[in-house]
Image (tube, rainbow, N blue to C red; front, side):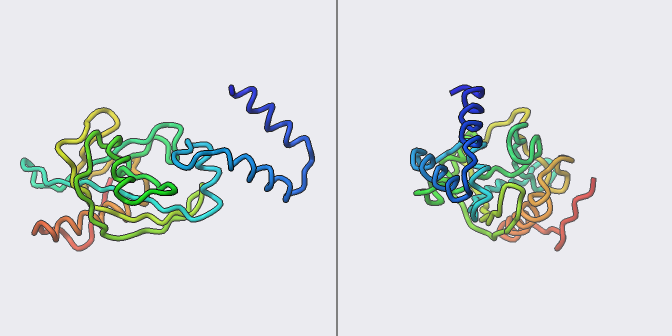
Length: 196
């Protein structure tokens, strides 16, 4: 169905002057026809505001041998996603019927390589315009080098791109860096401050 036909269908339902309960029944009937899984951005964003969303934040870190700095792998979001054109650690929402391994397998598309292992290191609650999210934060180990291009790149953890998703810059990445440093015997300051 093209966008013109979609608009006509929505206009037809809206012109019926239904009561709220009737809209809920129509929406429920239509949703019965949707297969569980990846819904696409417009439908997912419409549904996300209605309940709690559980997310898998996959933080890949490495120590740069030349600089000695800890680097984080980031992906730039597209213009039609939440946080348009901002950088973030790859992540995804858990879909119905999935476990963490299935989410990690889907995230291989963002990394361009498989996630070999993942370790939960914390969680973060955020209330976004599209709904509330409980993000489980994982340190991930990749199977080889991830893709690197204009939208996928390693950055020093203390020198992130200027347009990084706030809660990634302020909470997710610093927590992951501290856990990584402890695990690998790397000394870092107790509080990481990101200065632009």
